[in-house]
Length: 323
Image (cartoon, rainbow, N blue to C red; front, side):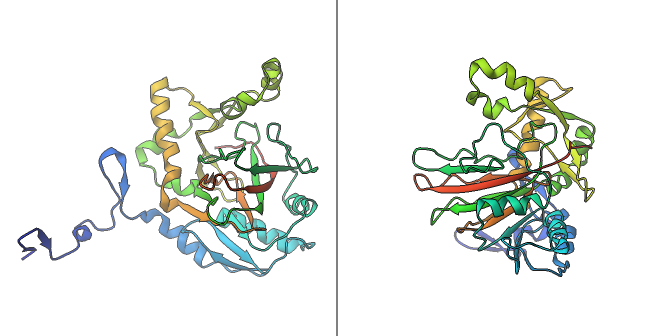
C-alpha cells in the first residue's frame, strides 16, 4: 500500500524524504543535502536575546541582524557602544538603515571599536585616509565577488569593518555573509581532526601583486611578508572555533603535499558557499554593514554592471589570530 500505480508514474503515498529523518546526506560530487541540524542551537540562542539600547531583527539562522532605534551620527553612550559590540559578537554581522554619515562621522563611529587601519593597496579618494572607497562604474567593474575575509595577509588582520553605502543600483549589488563558526561545526569529525593544528600561508600577492610596480615588489614584500595563520582560529571574545581560510589570500596549507593541500583547501573554502550558513543584505543608500572579519566571510555580488555602486569602508585593526 506504500505506492499508488498510475499509467504514467509511481506515486508514493508519503514524501520520499520521510524515511530519511533529520539526517544531512551527501549526494554525488560531495553535495550536502538535508537539514543543517547543527544550526538549531545557535539560531534559538540568538532568538532569545534582548537589548536595552536599540531594537534588533534577526535576519539569518545564525548570523545577521538589523538594528534600529540608534542614530550613528550622534555621540553614543559607552553603554550603547558596548551593546553594539555585543550584538556584533552575537550576530557576526549587523546592519543599520538610514544613516547619512559624513566621512568624519563614519570614521568617528568606527573608532569607537578600535584603531583604524590604512589599506596600502586600495586608495581612499575621500580625503580621509582611514576610509577605503569602492567606486564601481561601467569603466571600473566589481571584482569582490568571491568569498573572503579582509586582509588576512596582515600579521594582524582586521577585527571588523564598517561599510557605508553612498550610491547603490536600484537592483543588484547585494553583499552576502557566511558564518565561519557554522562552517567549522558542519565539517566531519575526520576533517576537524585533520585540520586541528594546521597552518595556512596568506599572501597579498595573490590579489594585489599585479598592482605593485616591478621595481617596488621587493620593498613591498619586506613590508608585508607572507604570514601563517591557523586553519582553525578561536574568536578572542566568544571563544568560538572558526574556519579561517579563503581563496583570495591563501597560497597553501603548510605541511601537506601540494595536491593534498589544494584538495583540502578547496573543500574548506567551499563551505562558505553553503546557503544555510549565509545572510544576504540588500543595500539602500545610507545603509551600514558592520561585520566581524574573523567570524564571517563576505561576497559582494557583481550583478549590476554597468550601473554605479559606491561604498566606503573603515576597518578596525585586530589582533593576530590564534588557535
